Length: 207
Figure (cartoon, rainbow, N blue to C red):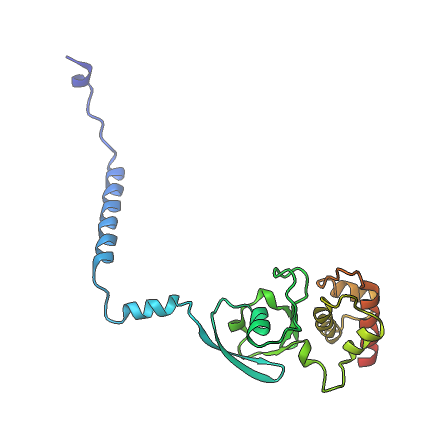
C-alpha cells in the first residue's frame, strides 16, 4: 500500500470552512448589489454628496458682503487675492509657516492659506485693506511707519494684522511677550527690533 493510500486526507477545521463560506457569500452579495439598478433619486443624492463643482460663496470682508461662484477647495487666501482683488494679503510659503497671509476672522488672527473660503461664511473677515478709516491709519499701521518696522514690505500686511490681534489679546505687556506672540510671522529682512518697537508703541497708544 502506498503512503498516499495509507495517509488520511487532510481536512480543514470546521471554523475555517465556515469563514470561507462567509467570505464567498459576502462577495456574491456585494457583486449583486453593484449590478442592481439604483433606486430612484439615489444617484442624484450620491452625486450631490461628492460634488466638487463651484458653489455660491458669500464672504463678509471688511464690512462688505462679497459673493462669487468658487470651488469648495479654494483657500481663503486665494479667494481674497484672486477673486476679490484684495492683494494686500500676501502669499508667501502657502504652508502656514511665514504668516504673510494673516487676516482676522471674528477678531482672531488666522493664516488664510490654511483655511477654505467656504468655511468662513457668516464670519467677519478683516484684511489689511479694512484697517484704515479713510485717510486715518490704524495706530498699528502708523507705528510701523514711524518705527521703520518694514523694509521690503512683503511681510508687513501679515505683521500688522498679527500685531493688531496681539494687542487685542493683551499680549503686548513687554518686549519678550511681544516677541513670543509675534513669532508666527517671519521677516526675511530681519526688522524684528523695529517690529517689536512698533507693536509696543501702538499698544501704549491704544490702551
